[in-house]
Length: 342
Image (tube, rainbow, N blue to C red):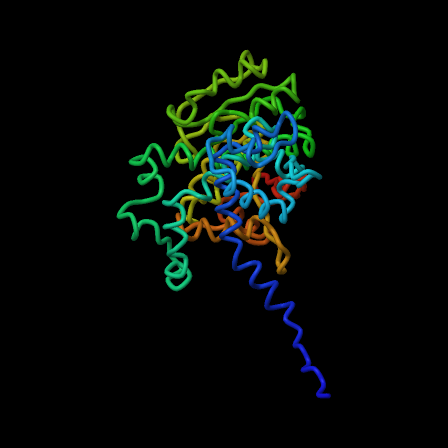
């Protein structure tokens, strides 16, 4: 009787295959998010047929979708074939405190997939490919496609909103009398800061369009009497004399010359003894898994910009007359980089 052939260890190849098929998981998550499956499971487990009846999908196809996602711990299968929420599925709900539904919807959008289909061109050239593909810059493209822009900014907002609580828990802002949030969007972070620091005042510097809801955000947080809104950006003169200037996910959107322009404007405005507080992903020097490394490729593809390591931030700040004095980690992937005038 002949011996059975030796079977090669194929675990590495199948682990790679699992990564390769990640695109399928992304589309499955996007489909579940668009259908609102996690939302209808909020009141308890349901069968695939019951779910399909509520979200308007095919029962068998819904079962197959949920079966696959359950294998990734997004949903759970209970005895009797009913599907239930897991902690990850909770984050897929629209009303979850740290909802990632918006990001799941964005990652399944055809325009985004078309962008990512040209990553190779950016890796070869070292330049953003979206302007070549679309014939215009990223923000101009979003401005001319309002439906996609709404999906895009809601998705990015999912990540940004989830970072507010960890940032507030990691850093004491109450030491500052006046805090300027530069390009701070709707003012969610500044509202949280002022709620944490009842003796502080804040100024949101943002465009009129991007800050349209800011007054309502400040009112809802109970800080409207201590929050002002100035229409502008980091590329113009900033309110002078504040002792803290916050830049959250601002610098990573721009190449170095634009970053230096923003930093120099902060340097010109900051009060003696004041602090620049940069809230960004700070990349490591090794090969550790970090969401910042994923966003870094996204920035290359869309904007020709990048994430940075701490030494790279130090070099950038020095060119603008600033000096890094410390880094405060948070429980989410962003850190708070402190800098002072050099």
